[in-house]
Length: 534
Ligand SMILES: [Ca+2]
Ligand SMILES: [Ca+2]
Ligand SMILES: [Ca+2]
Ligand SMILES: [Ca+2]
Image (cartoon, rainbow, N blue to C red):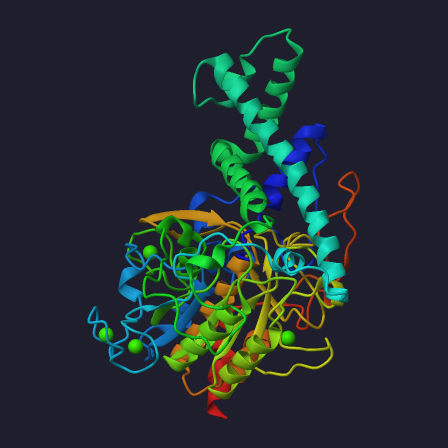
């Protein structure tokens, strides 16, 4: 499942419906002051590049690293594999950094480099024309009751999710109808807060609609309708595809997803059948590699990388087979860093993926993975987030997996995004993942949030280190990212506040993750310099 977080709007909707305005104030921590008020647009567009001490914004000090450490320094090109929903390789701010398989002749129908894939010029699309998919829990219950504990658990999880989706649908339908009622009353499509204020009425329904939309416009700003539409798409996709037991999305691929040896499938169109659906992967690629300082869109983290697009993540849960083969493809074709902004709670063939991770480890490839957006402790078995690098939540079977949680741009007790998963064993480190500006298909740009955005921010720093210090191993780079990070504030809020009428509960930040740190490019490069001299 692709991991764009949508809870902020869901929360907003809930807030609007109950019409209670309880601001969740979060106290500042000691060492640094949080940036007061809203960030300016230029600050927001590149907040993950800014510096806590200098800008009061908990970014990764990327700009400082370029200004003070990297000028005139030699680097090598590092290939970064983006295992995701596909990448728009023609995007104006990405096309110059897309990886090309030089050993392959395009369009001749021959596997010239004999890597097992015909005409794979910029990567591979393991999903063919498959876009919308079921979740693993849907697939498990579709197969029928086999008496296993997994079936029971999947069924309970499915029913909970399905009922919630029905409720969300009611909410989003209500919101769309409310918006329409205002549009109709004002007789204009695009209205403002001033328009809403000008509505004078004794009609009870209209008064309610006015109050709700005022709350929404105040919170979401002029992009409110796009946010409602995104939320609606998410809710409807769940009901129509993710939780739809009748759907067989795999049929168009033509392979058997239960057979890992059956590898001849997919195609070389790395953005998939519908470029717009490659939004997630294009955004992730942009966070890492959109061209710096070219006056187009935003800036990427790393400046000497090649993006290899490996499409394996549909709208719905990814198949273990595709993920295992996608990781192996990236490893075999030269990637030194792989970003995995996906995850799911059931993984029937998890061993295939574990074996691929171990293969990557053997070939010295770092796998950076999103911690997930459920606001849960993923150290607990019942909150498992796959893939992982541990079979028992006690011991890691590989040294090359970095699991990343998400930060907001407000330093203080609320700096960990409420949607971010956490865990002292299974989450390694945090990186910016809220309101991240990057490329989306067809030469556009967008703010997105999720641990999906935190993972490529960390992967970008990893690529930067591997590019300027190519002798360091994947294991060393993982260690550098964790050890050199800026410490989190002493106390933080983990997960969503279950009671918005009260101040959220804070805990020691040592409970957040293994390192209790935030990735910092500047410190990481300093440590890499030291380590490379040893
Ligand atoms: Ca080939
Ligand atoms: Ca060829
Ligand atoms: Ca740019
Ligand atoms: Ca781990």
